[in-house]
Image 1 (tube, rainbow, N blue to C red):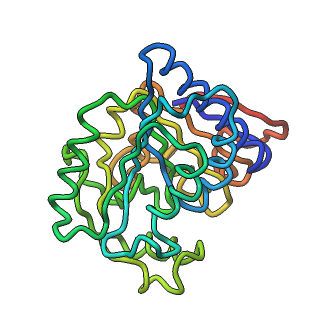
Image 2 (image 1 turned 30 degrees about the vertical axis):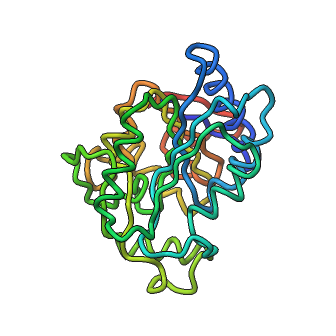
Length: 258
């Protein structure tokens, strides 16, 4: 895992977008197209904005998937991932193809299988997967079932993750946040060619330290990113504050491997 630390959230967003655009451009050059899996949430907003402005990306050759979606939330709800992705990515760059999870499907298990088959039909060039406040990856909360091999599956959302989502302002309280979702599995994330994790803000510092330098395993789901051969984490000074490797560091940017 390559870790990149920048002084500010804006510096992080710009550098992560530049790196990610280069990965996409390279994939298009090598095989004529690129497949990406996007993450959502407040922590991704600035990064997605910079990525949409990146020079040299032929978005007509890009196919987009996403990590997860709530069950039972109307698509026009302010917290809907469908709405989030349309407003912040799809309607801005107009990718050649995009596939959205239908969180309103009558049969969520069937929808998870449908979406998983779509993703499995192609190679994924880059997956964007942030780290949650509990160390969750996508919506796979701790303790994670590391034996789960289905590409997408239905899952209960932990109360702590629902509290995070409410704290970000998407819901009035954690009780208003949907209790179930369709999410990508950790196993499927690790099958993607490149994984990029954009993780800004002080509220993520404990999870970052746990996942990058703590015990490896199901209690820190995102710790599994350390096993990926081409995993890149982008932090700002706040989210990296509890990392032992950052003790005594004053200048930015900082790059190191874990």
